[in-house]
Amino acid sequence: MHSLKFIAATLVLTVISGCNVSMPPINVPANLSDINAKLATPKPLSQDEAGLGLKEALKKGVAKGTEGLMKPGGFAQNIAYKILLPEEIRNLEQKIRNNVLLNAAIGKELDKTIDAMNAGAEKAMSKALPIFTNAITNMGFMDAMKILTGGQGAATQYLQANTTTQLGQAFQPEIKSALESVAIYNHWTPIVNTVNKNKKLLGLTQDVNPNLELYVTEKAMSALFKEIEIQENAIRKDPINRTSELLQKVFKYADQN
Image (tube, rainbow, N blue to C red; front, side, top):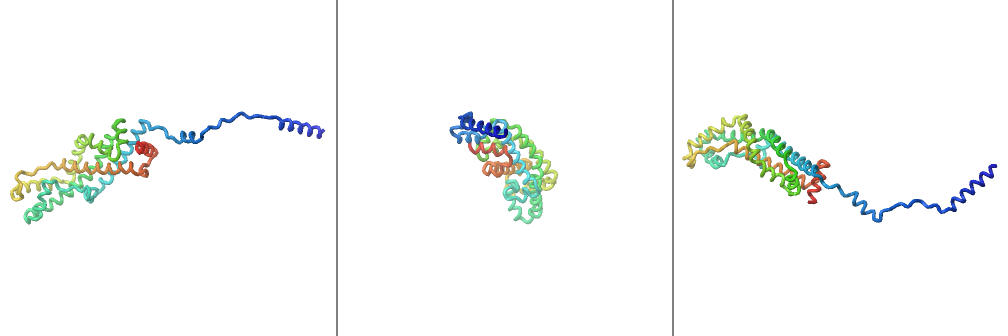
């Protein structure tokens, strides 16, 4: 009985092995490199990604720029950004320092004014951040694309060209408040009054009356724009500064365009 089963199984295997059994054909691509290339090709940059990526970069640059400037000494101890006396006074400063009577009267007040202007600018930086952030948030798509492919400094130039007046108007009261908080007018008003009383001695024909709030505001904004540009260009230049997947994608597109 077992022999019959063995013989039957052998016959079945023999028949199967003798048949030409064909498997369904497998469609193999003629050129695998084309398929791999298509898989490797990134999806095109969308409008949302372009806008969000650029705004993320700008907000990062603004935040990092203000962070350094708002620290104690961010202006006063920074050779590039330290705010000196307004030009009208600075041109007279050496004459004042060299004159025993004038130096005794206002020499120390000049030092206090310089310290107060820089301290005021440092304090105002924290109030400047939301103003710039709001301007960036409201940026349109077309402007974002122009900036994205505009090369180094394009974003900073856009902010300067399109928001300087508006930001200045909003920024100046904050600067004034910061200056008042360090009692700058206790130093500044006596200096201006003394200079004006001695204008003939100092070779002046008109009174000096510079707008100190506007002067410090412009200096503070100029420093902030420079810092923003430094951060913007760092992201454009060095991929290591593209700290998110979105930034990497957006600025890779910028590199290629």
